[in-house]
Length: 426
Image 1 (cartoon, rainbow, N blue to C red):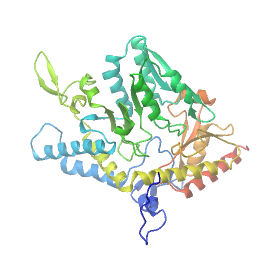
Image 2: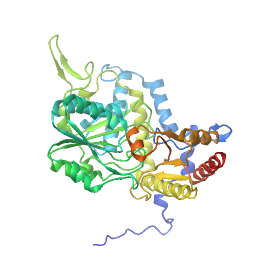
Image 3: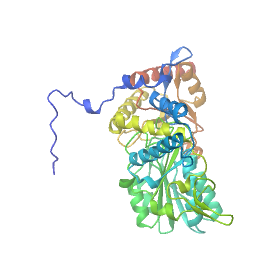
Image 4: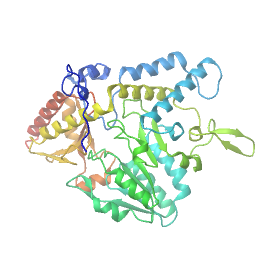
């Protein structure tokens, strides 16, 4: 059945609705005007953390200069303003991922969010002989907590195997590894090394058929594409604010309300209680039940401003911009015969993350040469040591892009890589 296309206004430019005004966007990011070793900064380390626009920086400055106070305590004006700003940040975050207000817990990063789920849900529900299923491409933060839980509870860890050449999970392994013994499946939505966008909807449906719960590590996907908690139907999701233009020290755990109501708190103390006696305590309502102590209010204000910024730009536009940059970078990298690229070669199911090697040059040496030209990438195992071993390397160089990057920057990146190849006589 064909869909009726809405006619474009006569004066509309082709594809105008999907293009970013990158030069205008770049003016919002003060750090991009900086020079490194006399060269204009080119920031290609967005998978580690994104840069921050003035709108985020100013929002946090304004909070500290005008409304700084603790939340959920004082009834004075500053206390009311601070509480209002903090709760508004929860509301905006929930709306951004299409979740209920009560289902969004603020943490200091995605790692803490995963640990919260591991301690509060995992310790109560995983038993001896149960199986936890991960993938072979997980970041340490979505591997080590579950290793600990499995060892503590004498459960088993199973891994969805990776086709290393294609950079994808083997489809048949999903149906082989997720069984009636599976109690939890925890997978990355987008790999921070390979850029692979995993078939999470298929995984979630199968897991739920087997009565298992699903945790999604969406730290890499939330900044770059629309992520809808309702449509995905994951039981838990974890992400960080600092990868999506927000400040460091901000993270989010999404969990379905029914789970949160049954889970015990991870941290205990102030603000997570409704009443306390010398003998006992009762927990606060959601989401505050899981947010003990004084929170990072300024960070929440910054995250709120980052969400406003991303909404104004448009996530659909960011998706297309990222795909265009990634396609161009893959094409240009292919021109250098000494480059080996890891991950999917196609751009329809991969994010703006490209890991590669340049001959036998160590990734740290490649990164150092690029840095001399003002190009900031990451060299190493990218907090995924088992994956690096699986790929047969000790380290890779990783270039990752975002809404303020350009094809001109990629051209300079390629020229610098070619220079590195000449230096090492490859």
